[in-house]
Length: 419
Ligand SMILES: *Cc1c(COP(=O)(O)O)cnc(C)c1O
Image (spheres, rainbow, N blue to C red):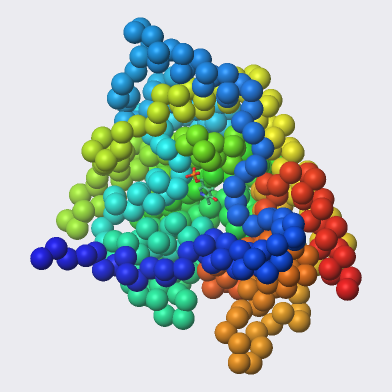
């Protein structure tokens, strides 16, 4: 008898964005004429930049010739892209990595989900709360997270980030073996300072812990003093794995490409105390389970690092950040308490008084606000509680819309708020 992996059955079967889509569809059926604007889901909207499109055309043509054809590529990525990564993303920040420390991937979601295969099932994991759901769910699937009690997993240590603590996670009292950090943060849009990040690196070094650092939004950092990579902190290459993605950097959500850094200095212990290099393990894992990212996608990614590519990618990021600025200004002027949006494409807003849980209803304040905004202004946001217990009482808006749609959504929110 084949037995199912029952850990999967513990996963909440309601995926946040599916729930939102269902509620939006219900509204649309009831109001077929309404024009709903989504500031909800975290996908980009602006087209690929010309340098990327040109590189993909060229790569496709090459593949159609006998000399230029490529079959299976190296699992860890082509050298042309890994060299461009070292030269552009790390060297200018004083970070010297070896080419074998870069693993090109098909996106940060896959690798942030898969990386936990390298550690034993009984490590304790710590996450900032609210959080990108992939980190926890991937641990649930192999049984590391325990069971859910009151919306929290029994073997996960939650580090709340809220307005009260300035969205700065505190080092937990209980021991943590593996810590997931994501900065700039999805969903809060907040960043971590060099000093705060240093505390985590020092914690990991002193406690023989690992940090899985998701830098998917580093390209949105505007403030020069904010670190783009954890390796800007001394000692991080002994304790951290870092994930990058071209999805938000260059609109690659449909192309699929990113990379993971696994430094050679990084080790974890066996039960007998032997130190094992995770770089070798990850290489072995990728050779077995991953076929590499397509040649065309990697050529597309390489084009981001050309002078034209850099300038075009920056123009799109600036475009989104103009939305973020407008959203911050408008929402603040309406009296809302808003966070993030200065170094990230997300605005994290406190649900105003008056949307609190009412006796007898199961709905939380962030879902109540979501529905009121949908019915009152025909604008979609994301209820914060979908990102973890500490997200309750907040909603997320994304700056990934067009200028026109964002402006229109803001005027509607303004009219609705003044009613
Ligand atoms: C969008 C996003 C990613 C990127 O995922 P891809 O698989 O590269 O598209 C990674 N981490 C976070 C927190 C994200 O929001």
